[in-house]
Length: 360
Ligand code: NAI
Ligand code: MG
Image (cartoon, rainbow, N blue to C red; front, side, top):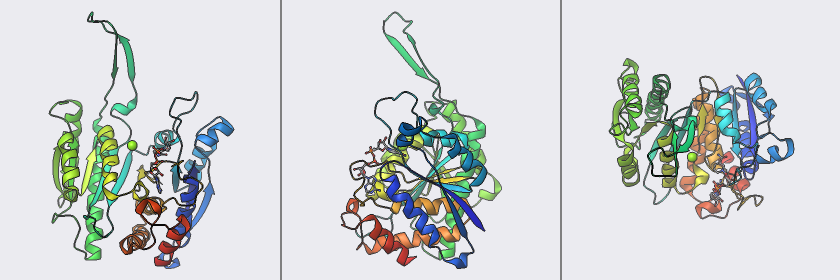
């Protein structure tokens, strides 16, 4: 099988880490029967300054017509609105209907770190992020303005995202079984936690909760334990007892907040991967931004990108290849000798990559 992969480095350290993703794909053992071809694509703030478009049409077209998956680095967003500029990754998610944002947060046996192994599955198309806002004069006589926003939850999107969470829970169990490894989860069976605030928002979050429950009641999820938790108490527990969680499914806004919070649990943004996933396409994307403070020094941690590359492969049904990359990365971290500066080491991007490639 040959997979064609779009490479979108974007801005800043995106250009230093995306090449690492390409190189680990090229270094996969030929015994897997997998080949790759690559196409370089543009997006980001510098692209916007050069061409007037942050996400050129040719980038979207090439992904749609030629590619099986893609790697996306990071883009710089100006902190004040620039006319005509909007985030290319948000646009890409829409144009390719990448309805799920999947973010594994996992330790790798690092010394002195409590083991965590969870995946946050965030709905990516609706909720408050439909951006239907309006501002109007306060009509109650108090003066001033009032602003409000639509929070849209559909049965369709809630069902689809909960189903994906269930599939991920089953796949994780399959991998644990295959490894014969004691799972680092404290539970004896896979578990999905549904996040909501339906005690207050009984219609919107109520629909999400009920629909997710119904989706996860399907027969094929019979081995998956399903529980639910109110989002605020979940934040508390996530910080107090992160090892408790296996798969978390959440509407867009809660998922956004929970996934950045969870990323803080593993020590560096440079470690945390994500994938934007649709029916038949996946984009791997490190969680970090373009890191202007370290750009050009060759010291960016490539591990978030290497893990994002593996995650992309998982969703392209290449689990065996993905597992090899995860194992090589975890071995580098567990040994803890060749670490980049964000982890307290002094290794360069290239040296970390070389160490992981050697283990692969
Ligand atoms: P950031 O993630 O770029 O950096 C935060 C801190 O983490 C910095 O100190 C940085 O040096 C460090 N860091 C991040 N990734 C690292 C890596 N791989 N290795 C070592 N250290 C790493 O977030 P920040 O500084 O708030 O934003 C910088 C720019 O990135 C902004 O323009 C922002 O809009 C954009 N951004 C883009 C994102 C995306 O493309 N998905 C996500 C977050 C921010
Ligand atoms: Mg976020």
